[in-house]
Every structure is written in C-alpha cells, then in structure tokens.
Length: 86
Image (cartoon, rainbow, N blue to C red; front, side):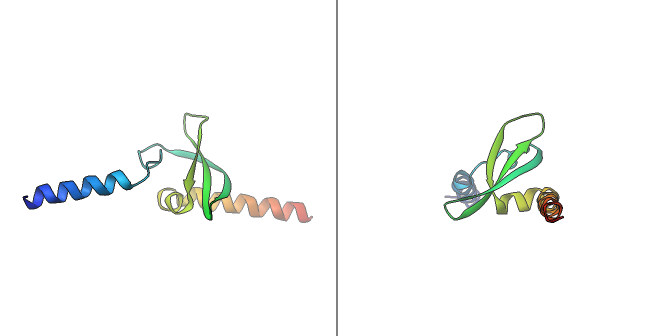
C-alpha cells in the first residue's frame, strides 16, 4: 500500500470515529442556553442561527469552536446570580 493510500485510510478511520456536531459541519451557533451533566461529561445545549433546533455538544468542543459564547454564557449567569442576591 502506498503511503498516500495509507494516509487516506487512516484519515478516513479517524474521521468516522469523531462525533459530528452541527458546529463541526460549519453551522454557526447563536446561543448557549444551558449546561448539563451527561454521564459525567458537561455538555452545552446549543441553539444555532436560522434554526430553533438545539443540540447537546460536549463542553470541550464548544470551547474550541466558540469561546466567546462560553464567556457570554458564564458572564450572564454570574450577573443573574448577583441580581438575585440584591
């Protein structure tokens, strides 16, 4: 097997094992609307542009693709908690 064919087959196997989330496929997330613990893994509930559909996406994937939304999510929750204390 040539090295190019070997590289292609390796890439194909790795690509098939990676979970496919809409943000991985190029869709733009609009908002993070929740954070849940699913079997010990934190996952964000993500809403996308031009859609009312939501998707659970692992925290590390969201951190990589849209860190600005993660910061906004935590800042908004912090402000809400501060408002409740007053």
